[in-house]
Amino acid sequence: MLYLRDATFVDWKSLRLRRGHLEVASGDAGKIRFVSRVPRGAEVLECSGRLVTKSFVIAHHHLYSALACGMPGPKRAPKNFPDMLKQVWWNLDRALDEDMVRACALAGGIAAAKAGTTFIIDHHSSPNAVRGSLDLIASALDEIGLGHLLCVELSDRDGKARREAALEETDGYLRKRQGLVGLHASFTVGDELLDRAIALAVGRDTGIHIHVAEALDDQKACAQQHGMRVVQRLASTGILESPKTLLAHGLHLNAAERTLFRSSRAWLVQNEESNQNNAVGGFDPKGLGNRLLLGTDGMHGDMLASTRAAYLAAQARGGMSPLDAYRKLRRAHDYLSTNGFQGDGDNNLVALDYAPATPVTERNLAGHFLFGMNSSHVEHVISGGKIIVKNRRMTRVDEDKILKDAAGQTERLWRRL
Image 1 (cartoon, one colour):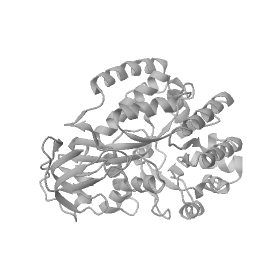
Image 2 (image 1 turned 135 degrees about the vertical axis):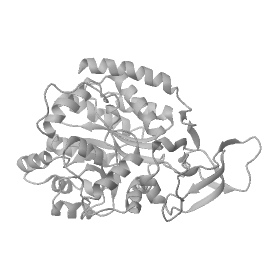
Image 3 (image 1 turned 180 degrees about the horizontal axis):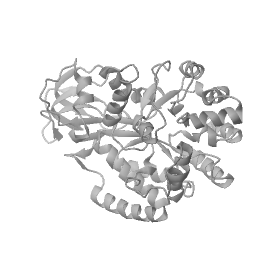
Image 4 (image 1 turned 90 degrees about the vertical axis):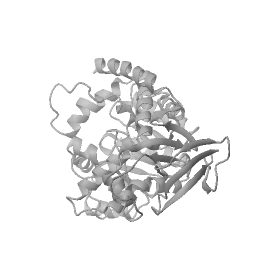
């Protein structure tokens, strides 16, 4: 049993504040409760002056891009988003091997944990090293102490052999662990692959995780190849009726598609910083309802930064209140809990060394999350009732060794690029 002494606890649902000693049980079903005293000899984190609350979830990540920061640029400037994919990101994922995949998972997982995240929903791609890739990522995140919901990207873009290998990898992994069935985007997914992916998801009682209308090119290709728009294509298969299905991006949706999504049971993940980086447009929540989550799309592992980016972007499109932005950050917990996914229990916590010049109250806490707190305030992180970050250092893995090894893998990767 772990005890947090003299913590100021923030209930993540109500934003109510309560000060006292917290008892934190371990395990997937571990609970937290206030106690009048801390037992002698117990494992204790001193939390006086710290805000303690539920940790964060990244609802859409690409850990395979963890070694990309500072990588060599393409030989020429991409003309559009498909050109960006071909010149940059598809070159990167094809260059990955097993050692690089593991290094990405460890380095990206550490970055996320130190920013207060304890659960990652990841969308992986390594077409030339797909066999065993999900187990590599899962074991790396397990070592760090992070919960996860993984998938490998299915696509027709790299040919039949790689498509079949990715399908086999997905099926084999889902036989052992919780996960999703990943698809790249409609414009690289033919009807046969889409049907097989959906059959696999239904057979393994899970959902699809797919990029949707990230750029206009996805819609144009869908109209040309299938005579309909992307959300209409997905809706026609029935997969949007699964509450486990995750759509990523959803920038270029018309009114009919928005109505289809809102009347479905699927969820949609906003990735604002990635949208800006790729110059594909801005996210408009109009007509989409409340099943909207936040992700990083591989840009980083910092969900406080992603929430701030989503809030600021919304100010040019009708506005968003700090409380609405905070609720969008927290909606990933609802996605995981309502679907019965394990690893995001009450005993996943973050302790923030946050002492602003202005008062912190229940009424203004959402504003503090947006305008005051950042990843530098993350001091301790607890996952499944166990400390995984203490005094801003990883406890279960040697982060210095991992990052040194990752640097070596980065050099190998960049030489291939």
